[in-house]
Image 1 (spheres, rainbow, N blue to C red):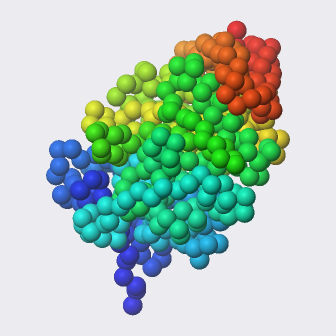
Image 2: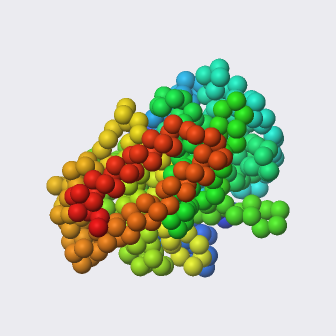
Image 3: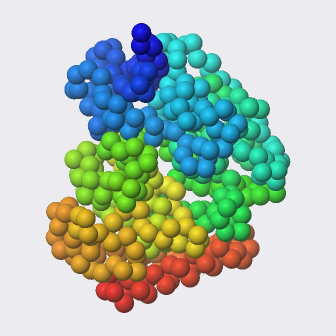
Amino acid sequence: MAAPSQKLTVFYKDHIVGQLSKDSDDFWSFQYENSWLSLDSAFAISFTMPLSHIGPFSNRITKSFFENLLPEGMNKDRINQSFRDIAKDGFKFLTTFGLDCAGALTISSARSNSAASPGQLTEIPVGEIDRTIRESKDLFNFTHKKYHSRFSLAGAQEKAAIVLRGKKIFIPTGEYPSTHILKIPIRNIGNGVDSVYNEFFCMKLARSIGFYVPKVQIISGEFPYFIVDRFDRYQSEDRVHRIHQFDFCQALGYLPTQKYEEDGGPPIREHYRAIIGKSQVTIKDALRYLDWIAFNLIIGNNDCHSKNISIIYSPEGYTLAPFYDLISTAVYPRIDGKFAIAIGKPGRGQFLWYKLRPYHFHGVERQIGLREGVLLKRFTKVADKVRKALPKQKKNMDKQFGSLQITRKIELEISKRLRIFKQHKIIA
């Protein structure tokens, strides 16, 4: 006799959106609740999960949305070591930690949202975070075991969902929504702490040239910590509200193992067509996306994969989310030097920045229906802004944190790339 299906309820605020199920063969399915479909305010949780679909969604489509809410890589391995391989079973992980995920949905084994704990805030001193790093402990395990947090954050980097009030850090429990994400230094690259300054510098540089990015800051104890405002949250009076969002793997039906194009992930044309077909501000978002590609090539962010760009939903419709996870990976020789997305014709795209030539960009233009030269003009525009803003941002970093080797490396990397892009006639 087959084992009964396991079921979880997916909520948006107090509404049941649908049921997430897993059978004994590890086949997942999701089906919208009729009560959700009858609401005037109902929305599709992903482009691949339209409200018009009849019956449950397939295993592949369901996993492409819900597995992309889970931790990955070394972060997943560390969680498994302390929680008896819980992250090997994504369904079990969401059962335990699905109350605070990316976006607006909460996931629970209860059929009523009122059954979940409203939660509370507990302050976590910076010194305790320092100690987890100093003693090589895992931040996720520490916050979940000592502070009973129940968040799930995608990605391989160690991070925590927090509430920041002034300079004080709080861990939310139950359904209390987090408002910020705290990232500790990546331990196995650079000098052990400079990833924090790297991301801060690149995000500030992006903001200085007019990119829409969340507010970022650094709080320091014994170690520096990168803190970013969650763009999938907003506050009115004393209440925090969740905003629905999903990354491009979720949007297009790709598993987290396919976030890089070289691993079977979506190419530029799929990103672009989704924006053109779904965004309520089509031209603005299409240009923002092209500028995002250019900026990542200029700063050397080879990790700009399909989970590092997202869509947000509001009652007015879908728009491209603020840009996040902007970091110069090129300054670390141990990290793969290939760009996350190929530039060029389908099947013949180029992943190495220094081999790019104008014809690669013309190949992209033909795929997405742009006039020849449009992409290179956008690239030149972004490059000019970066060139002008770079000295001031470097000076600001020096003033705030002292002369850092990492910011000098990024400055040199950007300058080198701009010089070579000009030599190759990619920028004017």
